[in-house]
Image (tube, rainbow, N blue to C red; front, top):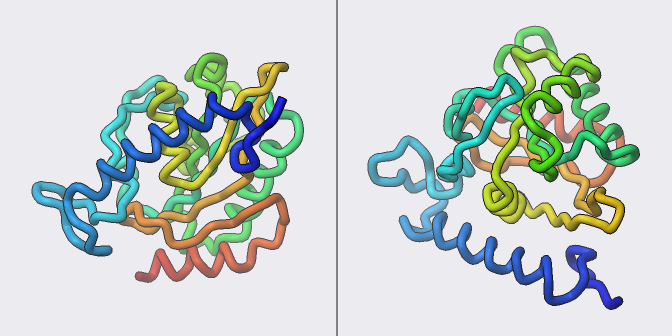
Length: 209
């Protein structure tokens, strides 16, 4: 079977969904104007803020939330799934290294977000158990469950490709994204290298901005 070089999926299936999701998301973001820091009418979010997304998610505590509720802190965001045995645990470990490396005065100003690729399996109770297993502080870590279309929309906006494999796992981009207090992307940490200096510098700058 021939697979797409971009998303690793069988051609003509997930790629089509990604294209549709991309067009929908970009239309939503662009309809208020292209200016990079333009304030949207009736909104506190800029034209490049991910917090424009209006989907409702569920936290690990089963509380409904929109991404915009996370504004005001710098956020380090990654997409993952709990049954991943290789890349995702390493990705979460790198995020924990970043958390541990933050100076005490910056820690209250930085949050960490994990969004599951696998909403069918990763229900809020599963996410809660994962948070406890990985010793993720509930005051700083937000684990999110969303509907498949919301997950796809967010992945497109972040530049994350993913596709479900025959064993029920996911082939996916390994990416951490730093969002400033307004939800704008200010840094990307690509791959599973544990060199976190650039990411820490981006966080410090975003906190001070």
